[in-house]
Image (cartoon, rainbow, N blue to C red; front, top):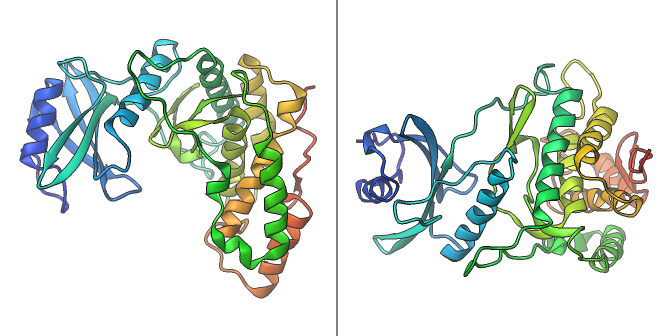
Length: 336
């Protein structure tokens, strides 16, 4: 039986329900971690000499149909050869199921465990041009195949993501920035939504959501997948990669390499027009404003904001500067 390492871990009832549904020995189930939300727990289990991830979400905000829709997309991508966690269906052929316990609803799903190492900006083997290229290539393949994806019969569609929802009401305390944000959002909301530019995206492609396995990059954590622009998925990935890893402790600057080699990898499998390439900095600026509105967009995450830093934050947004030395009209964002 799984040990009670932390409060609120999987109960005997839920463990039994998961083991019966997926056909594994409950003794092989091991706790890994909580998700960002305390109501999400992750475990591993063994079945047929393979290792799987078990995800349990308590009090989910969405319906079980949304979880099944996520897993349906992942199954499609895995069948196309994209390196994402391939869902394991229950013994009854379900992509996910719900269970009730003590008045709480839980959504339970399982998928293959992905191999690989977490990124480390201070380890040259785990943060380099090859990693950026292969990461971009994997994202490019995901978007390429998603163009032709349609949900399975009777399957719900995942929700649409509103870029506007990223930005906190706190932005109104800064009228100049709020005005820029409104103009930016209006421009974004008029962009085309054809199948080549708009579809299901990961929606949280920061460096913590992929694993490095040699030349392969495995994308993970698709909980927040929604419909939006592919250029936003790219812009969000690049902005967060720069925010978290544009330089290491030795002072090496990766800014140009991250942008250039991610895009080279992406475009090697999924070409984009100059029009859409030019929109990536637009989405990156939206990410910067979103972090600004939450009070956490300092170029070095974790830094506190002095009055001078606060003024510089506002000035950089007014001048469309993503980071020092990295303008929003960066020259790398065009076809060569």
